[in-house]
Image (cartoon, rainbow, N blue to C red; front, side, top):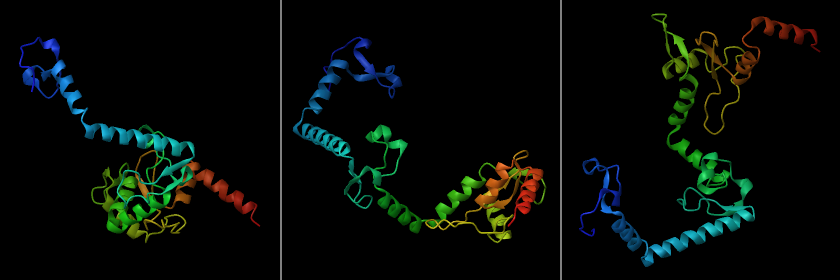
Length: 230
């Protein structure tokens, strides 16, 4: 509770969730401070605070030695809980502000094991994510109306089926992703119109991009290779 006194508005803090009170807190600043000090001076709170400080110091000591614990403060199923060299952890910029080292919380082996487990539980989600990353920004011509429209996952699957999972140019399969077992074919589109042409492997798709989709350049490259063929 509070002191029960009538006080000026300037003695109350701001509370964005209380528009009926002109966004002013229920407790005055003095009572709010006293309540906070009372809650943070209990033996349990001080013990937790001391444990956190000791853990921070332990993390800093390990980091100075080039070491880190895998899966600290995480579920046992996520990390092996072993102290490993920093080189065993992949970089993760998102964790830079959180733990200061810019590395994953779990080692590479545990990360691979976790992703394999997730794939076994929901393989279609990974395939859908791959499709979504490929078709979300492309346009196709509707086969009925002939009008351009946004590409969907069904369009991607139909093209993949018609091409029998092969590249539209080299008719190869490319290198399949061993972990997620997904097709390596990418969406090839006209950079001027944005209309999708077909699915191509990474090599052929990159070759078109480097040649700026210029047929004359590709013909000259073919003539060059034939000229110096062994």
